[in-house]
Amino acid sequence: MPAKNSHLDVALEPGLCNPLKKLAKKEGISLSLVASDLIKEALGLYEDIYWQKEAEKRERTFSHKKALSHQEIWK
Image (cartoon, rainbow, N blue to C red; front, side, top):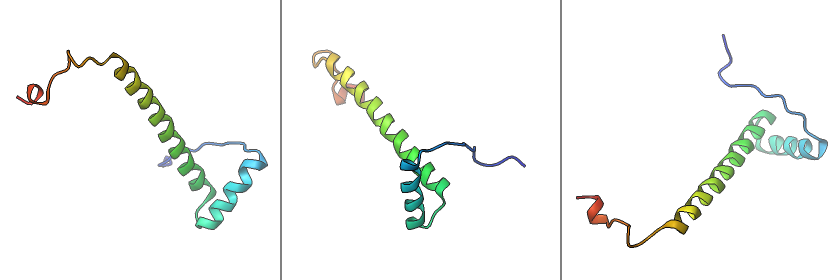
């Protein structure tokens, strides 16, 4: 039976691995779960940065004269 989750082997320097181990022990969860949670959080931050840049691009090209009003959109 195939595994539900993908597996990833990662080599970490001691300066990164030791704090992860301490956090896992403190939280009472596996090292794998700590790493997975931190990766999810980092990806969320990258996504936020991407959408912030997209919003800034749109803001620069926004024209009040061309914009539709709320009533025009929801007729």
